[in-house]
Image (cartoon, rainbow, N blue to C red; front, top):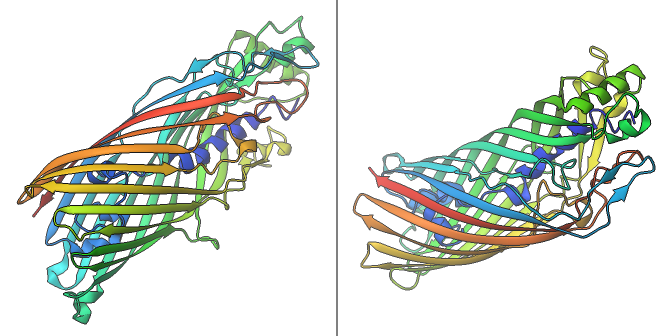
Length: 472
């Protein structure tokens, strides 16, 4: 009872933050040209968005170039119940589990992208700056759905300013006419915010103390928090002029396994319905546990080392055919160790046993993309693309805060280019589904079942990118 009806709820919700910051909520669409080609841009060097896909490629951009854009994202997620029978705990608690289909609430997102590149006095050195919301999005479920005790709201937003210096090795060595070669290195700062919510099942208190606690008592934990981290990136670009472009980009952090340690801290506020207030008071009166109005928690999340490689065929005038492969190693994300301020001796209002470790055991996530661009009359680009993305989430830790699956991506795009700038637009249709058939949400104390919400989770997402570029 002590463990289940107290701040373990905070642990569970803090666990949602890194889930949303990795894998299924990583945003790879940070430029309308890239969106139209399904992100196959690592081997292409004609756009300031190279600051995201391959910073070494900015050596092929003349003068000063600025780029600003936004990607509108509108996901539709649904839950198809697994038709399990309603579960009953030994004390009589009943939670509708796997019997009620429901659609997640619809909410749009609009990550931005901002890039600037500068050919430093034609010296062979180039400076680049980029700003993206590379991790984000969210999931919103109705407050009374089957999985309400696993999660009702997950919203993550991040800002990643990146500064990079690229060196045109081919120019400095004097062989640029026959082969282009450049190298870049950079620093990334990460700032993220989160707002997370879930219900707390207190119905077991009613069955233990029916004379003083009414039916259907519950609480809700609402967490807001933030975190910062630091990372690095290196990149390489090579090109046989007019024939083939090659790119490689790596991103990581300063941990021993090259992951980025992100210390995340938040404040959790607890609210209750009327009978939930009765249950909280009864727990305190019986000396079983104390649920505060608010407390803080902290957890360090290891964001993964990742890299992307790409090749682009340039042998036909006005035509680019490109392929990209992206890989993120989430093996460092094997568990979360969470510590609460109320368990420290300076506070002491909660049991130390509330400090908990949650198993995740994530693996690799990869994306393969193909993209094509053909420019009519040197001013009107036409783009198409296809891609597929794997999920790093294993079956035994799959949960509805991150309803992931093998993603399929279909893209188209176009734009208009003139001498000093261009305007591009790109559209992506993404769809995937996943099965939850595990014990996540089963409770753990034999009193509160909570509800697994096992079944099928399906998502269809529409993305529309708009980007403006100016050459100064």
